[in-house]
Image (cartoon, rainbow, N blue to C red; front, top):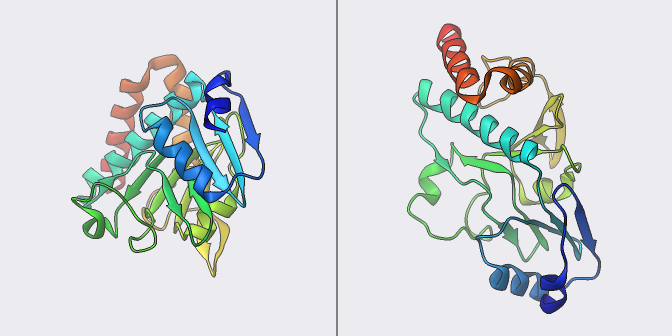
Amino acid sequence: MLLELRKLSVPPGDRLLIKDVSWQEFEQILEELGEHRSARLCYSDRTLEIMTPLFTHENSKVLIGDFVKVLLNELELDYEPSGSTTFKNQQMAQGVEPDESFYIQHCQAIRGKERIDLTVDPPPDLAIEIDITSRTQFDNYQRLGVPELWRYNGQRLQINVLQDGKYIDSEVSPTFPNFILIDKIPQLLKESKQVGSAQVLRQFRFWVREQI
């Protein structure tokens, strides 16, 4: 299978679904493709998804991740960024690579580790997915127990909070309850196309300080 995957070319913005992939095959693919690759992988119920992001996808994910860092730093909250780490659990047969992710409440539990093992380690406290080219499936994040998931589709930011094993929509982030982010973040992402990323990051930092 790996040889076949190496022959495949997934154009930016497209995704490829491969059915009936065993956990062992998924592990082998992760190991041999390595961490330094442009494609992102998602595995659930023996289905492997391969996606190659567009520039607008990458630009949005970096900016939203930077917004989160501004919030964390201005609020003086301890955290560890975990980026697009592959989070997987063999017992649940789930594996996912978020666009961005952060350990906040559980940052001490994983600090200093080279690898995350979700059979013993907690999942990230916040995961971010950019749904411009494809829509994030809840199953992976729900089963892995990620408490908070943000999804941005190019127009709207949706905040999902895990309750009783299922995600519910929320108007506010439980991590940042005093900030109306579902309005502010899409507004600034739209503005960034005109004034640039650096300018909107400065605007966001100023806005956060005003709220505090």
